[in-house]
Length: 372
Image: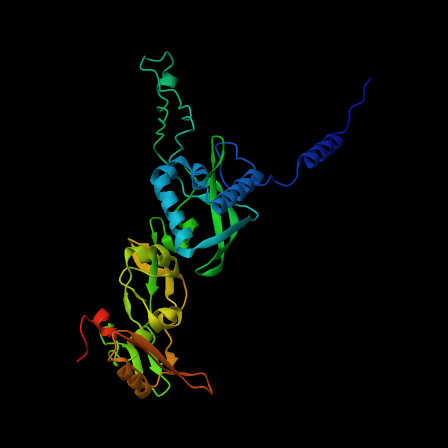
């Protein structure tokens, strides 16, 4: 005969079983997902490849990583033009990017990607009368509209990207950026906007390079005689007229041919450049150094300066010419059709006069006439 187990033992066993099945709740999914998510290692690899392509100027490969919807909004031509503008305006010499540890983000709800199949909607109720009165009373199943945003945030990753940009124009720029990635059918896709280059560009900004150029320096004598200066309207004038004209030289506006060799030095149409004499020989000192500003221009916001360099105005150049000695030397040569002479201080080596015949008035080149 089998004895009856006490009911208390059964209750205790139930408690043990309940204890064995209990434990901490599973971690909640940080961001809802209706499809498998690619690995974070793949996201870091995409970011590293993107930085490598950027450094090599392989913009087409960078563009190929974009989410198709954004690749349509930012076509390859526009994408390449913006990156090329940055490289040219800043005169980028080297670029290197280091990806960091990705972090999970939830992006705003949006329509389902076109390359994912529609979820199977619930079958519509039959139009035929149901044999079961209870079945006919059930409410119709909701229909699925694939154009409506999927409820809840879209899962994604942000991969930090530290960029070091070495530029001739602005020096070394340390830029902290983030690449936002979402899941595509075949892996991660980049959610790119111009903000990846500079946040100040917003979703539709462009880059502009502004230049500021200071006044040209004067040519003066040790006795404070002014040999060359800028008039109020910035036209170059030569107050001593033909006195030491060949020594002082003259300036004129740059030509298209000049710009082929001078554009890299910051010259633009409308600038002047020294053509002869001290004006040409001391061009770099007299001209100074332009200031540059890289500007974010947006249709929906004020322009913002991203990075800038200071303008350095032209410096004065001092000559040891002595007006009285120079005038005497030129007067001595005036009876002759051609000739030249020089007067040098034997003690210091200072040049007091340099004269040649025929005489030359630099105002005729800048003003088309003399000052008188």
